Image 1: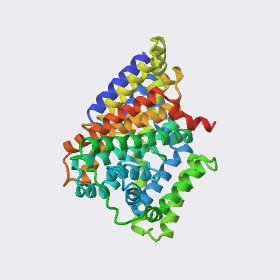
Image 2: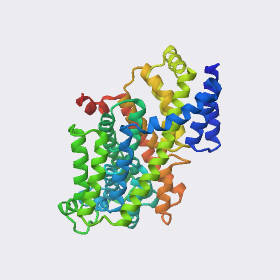
Image 3: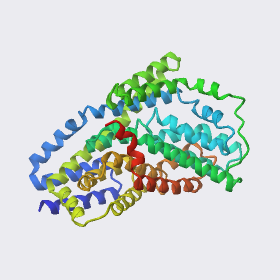
Image 4: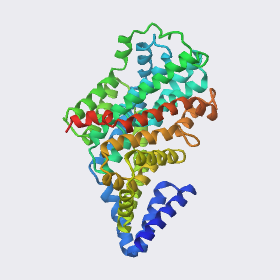
Length: 434
């Protein structure tokens, strides 16, 4: 009977999500109703009252608001404004320099942000008008920024990776290190796409050199010293073992505030906006995570988790077949759900399968974040595309931006295939930490 309730619970969850009920409420409602049906009302209310505190009180999760605060302070205080100019000065002689510069500027912004939406919005305001003036086709200019923004969740500090590490009980630091490898691979792959477009379609991406306003690479790099110091502070301490990923969040937040104050950019308005956005974003993430924690308990009590993992093991599904199924699941979910919801809805079901199949959870965490970020530029609900539309509405329509994103979606499939076929490319650096 419990197994049957578990299946009914998953069906009810799918129906509620299709009805556009918020993910958090859908997870909590299904979990509470399922627990009440299996155990009675009193235990169900007990789980409902105890889970929020027991989950949110996790020490590791305290890194989430800290890294968010670091990113919001860096953004609102203007510490990241010179990233695009610096990348442009360094890459000015490379064909397609403006688009490639925007991709690498997104990578740099990601190192102090951890949000693909924030990356896309920040770089879109700066880079798209300049690319359009330089002769880039507006749809491709917008598409390159939307795609570049997805690197925001791959380069640490990644909020998605922190939440994944807590749920899978794996080392957040090791997932971070693996994310650096895949983030760099993604940036290189996007740059190759831009170079190919510049070579094959100069009507879309002009070949002429970039006018960097006589700004030398050295001068440009000096202008972004606050970001470089913040990255060195967080990454240096994190990867050297001086402090944990959780402590790195606090160090990064304090460092961002201190640097903003030293440079005279820490206004009351910037600090207030950073604190408010940190609180609202943390609250929205945590309530989804609480719902996912309840859903995990519901699946465990119903016995459905063990049933699914044993069924997959008994079916003798090979590694490539299993990964193909997982990739399709996340690509489909990414078309309709935001990343946190898709991640936390699927982890309770998939983690037992991967543990049974002896698949490295560090590697899977990096790959699943990449798959979720592909969903950020996949129609019909590619959130990065709509963010770019909001900051560049005069340049391209939503459909034109989706068209501009298409080459990057195709190369993303290649990057995921490489990660699946050669997992050592991601695990090399994390294995060095063991």
